[in-house]
Length: 238
Image (cartoon, rainbow, N blue to C red):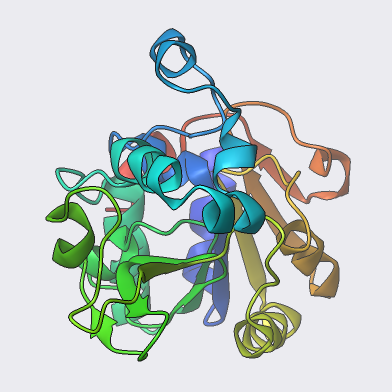
C-alpha cells in the first residue's frame, strides 16, 4: 500500500481528524513564504523580514512595517487550492473537526471551512489601537502609508508579530482538538516555529501524518510521512 493509499484509508476509517498547517499550504495558492529572502526583497528592504514584522519594529517604524506588510504579506488574488478544498469537504462530511493554521490569509474560510483556529491571526481583521473600531482588509490595502482610523489612531492588523504572544484561548482550543483526535494530519510546515510546533506533543493517537515537500525534525516520530506538495496529495481527495 502506498503512502497516499494509507492516508486515504485512515481518512475513510476516522471520524475525528484534525489538520495542522503551515506556510506550505498557502504557497501553492501563490502566497510566498516571507522568510525566503528573494533578490527582489534584498533590493527593496534594509532589514530581514523577522525584524520588520516584530512588535518593536512596528512601534518604532510603522511606515516601513506597513510597506513590507502590504507588499509581502497580503496577496488579494490568492484563491484556495486542492488542499483547502479537500479539508473543507472533509469537515462537511463530519470527519474533520478542526483546521489549526499558522497562516493569516483566510484561505481555509474562503474554501468553506468553518472551524478554523488561526494561531497567528488574520489579515482580514484589523483594529484601531486607539478606539478599538474594527476594520476589514480594505482599510489597510486602500490606505496610503500607515492606515488610520477616523479617530486618528493607527489601524493594526490582528496578526501575531514577533515578540507578541499567541492568543491563549485559541491555543487551549487547539490543544483540546489535537489531544482528542484519531488522526492528526500536519501539512506544509517544517515544524520549526514555536510555540505552535509544540502543539503536536499533545497528540496521543497512533496515526500522525506529516505531509511536507522536505524533511521535518519530526519525521522520525510520525506514523506516516509523505514528502510531496500538500495540494498534490489532496488533489485526489478533492
